[in-house]
Length: 221
Image (cartoon, rainbow, N blue to C red; front, side, top):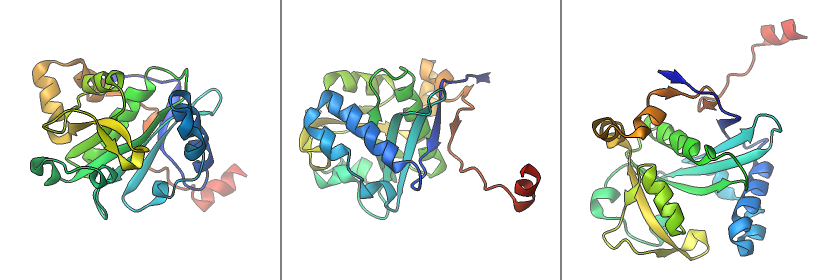
């Protein structure tokens, strides 16, 4: 297995310390392409702390600045946000599933931020027994990027659909087969197999770090 270090870290966001930075990042990232959403994105979002939700956050090592984030919302205890705007095909709707929302990348951030967030979402899905990831993509360029990362069209009619939870903007709806991904990458000798499976990124950490024991704190004092 290859080890690859990054210029940034990928962690589960801490609701006590990271929410303000998340809002700033989203306002910057979405406002860069959609200025009308900047003000809305700068506000606290109750969905970040809702049950069944995990928020991932990338921070630049040198500056500590938040440079990327993604939110994973599982279909328990409530339906996916995207399912308020459309019905997934029955075969997909029958699976334990999650939606990637509020994926935000700071302008000028490393090109590895997006694929690392997708890898983190994939690993989180495997750990929580989610079988399907769903995402909405606003533009043809984003559709190409996500297809390159293993997503496929989720709907029979692959045209864009307005999404209520995304400002009613039209999005292409894409899905990712979590269970079959590793087998598919390996069979096709796809470059994603090396990146997703055969490369260890120490800077990607999805387990909460345990609090220091009192004895350790006393020794450090």
